[in-house]
Image 1 (tube, one colour):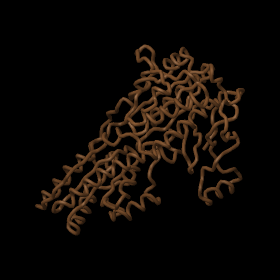
Image 2 (tube, rainbow, N blue to C red):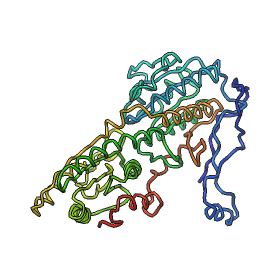
Image 3 (spheres, rainbow, N blue to C red):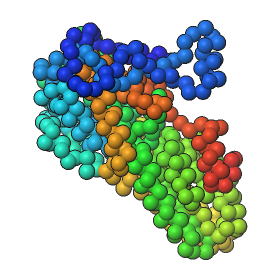
Image 4 (spheres, rainbow, N blue to C red):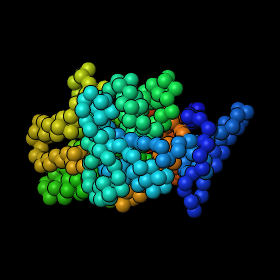
Length: 424
């Protein structure tokens, strides 16, 4: 793992920030937290891997009075995007004295001049209360644009730092922008701020919006539990977001121990195995609550090669599939059940961030600004071992972070739900 962060050049200007603790370039934190992992690295004669610590630097690369910056938000909505926009804008204005901040509208489309999306002028007044709103004031879109066209526009506008707020596809696009700027010899800093409600960015402990999503998911689970308990052989089925990783479903299942089955992409199951376990649960307890992540059980559905505008394979709807399969299973056995199906996905992702996520957004935004003004590029601000860090985009997008089926989290879910470890 190479955690080296790309830099634009020498930092020649003193930071205008005062009364803060400056971070030294030599300050790093351990990637591993377990002694046996660290011992293995040292035993091979090398040094254990470390990440560059985020924070303000005493000397910076860009001269604030002559620097313009931009912010773009891409991909699906997520609680906290407006908090990030606000944090970046205020930090640029008040910490560094940057007076021109462009808000590019409709995702990467907004960076292509010929498409005609006029950027917003982001000022402290313009972003003053946007943290109270869900969604993004800049709007969003999916799908790639040509890096050359986007860099042409950024160069014409005199942009020194571009902050890209998005998930895996957005960050890969940011990497392409950094590569194009490097090819031209253009001093353009590209800083990613990881946005994914699924919490699946590699080398990032937790992404903003995730905690809000789990809180809102629990509201749906509570409703499913009430409905299931209010009928003989009642079943509450809740589908939650999580294409490749089941973190929302797993953590939501640990709240109040109301969930009896948690189905995630990382733990395969067969339809017969699950339905058999569900039947045994109803026969013994008379009700059940099932939580399923959207990417779970895709092998049970008809395969498709169709992709969305971001290049992701379009998944089948596991929620409605299980809803119908459960009904057919018990109807064939003349066993009456009452099933309530709840899909709160768009309600969850459109919520404003809760207080903890808002604080995380502010600190991620500040860390991104410090990194950009210090001339870092082609990187993502992260959070690892409870510290804010710098992560190369290539590492952050190298693989999706997933739940380890043999790890502590999944073991805790199994202990909470009481479901069988194997349902094959």
